[in-house]
Image (cartoon, rainbow, N blue to C red; front, side, top):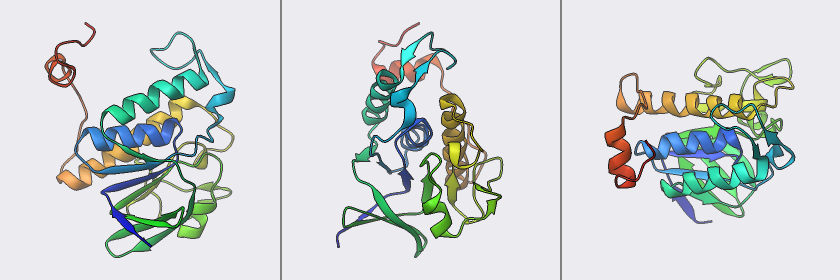
Length: 196
């Protein structure tokens, strides 16, 4: 079994997972996102996502994946079959390959099986997390519908993913980390072509 190392492994390619992957990679952490395209977003149409007037869920996912890809997130189109604690972090198995990292973000919607097998604490039927989305297993995070009973909101899920990534970045940098950009940052990234 081949092994691939990263800083952060994100299991799930919906709004929560892609948001976590974007924030982590944008700020220098090697990030792998496992994305089977099984998101409920394909059944959605967004009118309530801040900054978006109206967009089909599938079109939103295409744009979100393109953005994540442009920052260099490695997206693996494979189903994760196991997540376990390993030396100094976590091991994820997908399609016969093993991936390891210091952190894991679980963003599998209402499917809480991987969180259960990892040994995360539950509060009734939902994964128990703190305000940073960290579970009872240190450096393992759960997001979105996994931590909220029957709350299927893309914008809440994306916020959960961002919170998880910012906490990971704070741990890595040894201080509270803020992902706040200014126009000069956009010019540097997009070559002066950013919208004003």
